[in-house]
Length: 263
Ligand code: SAH
Image (tube, rainbow, N blue to C red; front, side, top):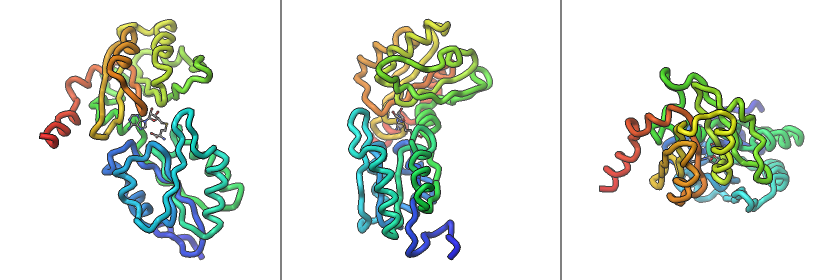
């Protein structure tokens, strides 16, 4: 029977790799919401918000796969094997990941295992943190006056040492978005200045972007490590570096919406 891309195919197990967006459940795609309501089982990561999980049918099995830094509840190979097992039992499986599954989400690795095991799968993109978090922080990633290019990099430094391509990160007229960079922030700022970036280059770190707990801390490469430590920011945090960060002051809309709702 030909698979209907809009609905689950009965009796044939299938894995739907679904992006959950950065946190605000209203950023889910319609397709994600429908699949969450119909799935037999949801395998979800640590960054998936409670508001998103509220769409899951009460009868569905929920499996937490974890993946906090240094605290992997299930190892990646175990997750891969679990997905194959569940689909082989004929289940409709939603593999739910924060943001977009193909951006720093190991979605590709999971799909390779499924493909190798002959398990059918589909992918539902989500709003990636760079896009969702910058929007809610009022920081456009490109702007004709400031940045014509935008880089997404991971700041998860191996053994505390940096193996990022620093010369490409310090080019002018671009915005650099760093995922998973909170722990390495002092080293990232130091290396960027050492490779020629201005110590005054604006930088923002956004915690819990798009959620009511969102916090935005801004500064410059020279003082950001201190400011972030003072503010006591915690993961997940997204770092945005570049002249566009200046626009936050003028365009920060979410703080106002939050305070209107709260008052
Ligand atoms: N696949 C995800 C990224 C997973 S890596 C995506 O496309 O967004 C996890 C990193 O994403 C976090 O360490 C953080 O840098 C960033 N991130 C995800 N959600 C976030 C949020 N709500 N606020 C701030 N950063 C977030």
